[in-house]
Length: 258
Image (cartoon, rainbow, N blue to C red; front, side):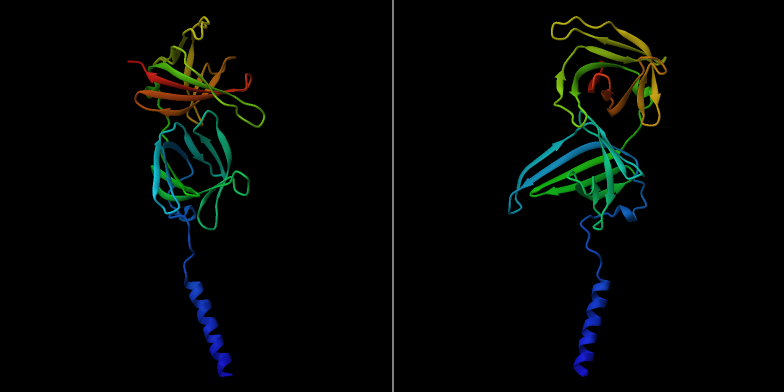
């Protein structure tokens, strides 16, 4: 009887000890418990990639500064614009407090949240011996004044797409400029390319459309077009457009005219 009583005490102690242990989390920050609003659009700041050997020694460290943004929606969907075409999908937070994109699919990706503030978000993904840090800052919708300049063409990536895929982008360098005027008019002038004569200049009206901070040309007209602002700095502009008739995604890079 004494042995039975002692065994019960040991069992109860074990259960009590396990119940007091905190859940082991793979993420430093659990978004379930965050009081900071992360359900918004984040501008891509940088991507850092570290590759280590089996002993943990750093082999390579690489930093890139892609254009685009990462939008986390309250209906558990996301929009990612950081290439020549957008990526959409679903997200959730698992039991380990990891931020998961495309859960329970072949494209599932898990991230640890290692930084979150009102104006910054950093996600970490580890695959084998490779660690990827993705840094974001709060996205700021462009103002009319920030766009009212002449933007000279740098290059355009044209990516044809099909029902379920996006094909390799075609690099196109063509002289010309895109001028957004303070009176809500625009001028588009394109130069010759590959020996072909230039198209005629285009003139029309422009503005910013909501939601999405889109640049809209010739609103309520037959040739109405919308552009996603992927990146805007004091001297550069990157915009994206989908042509559903030609089945081509256009990623257009500009530099402010000097």
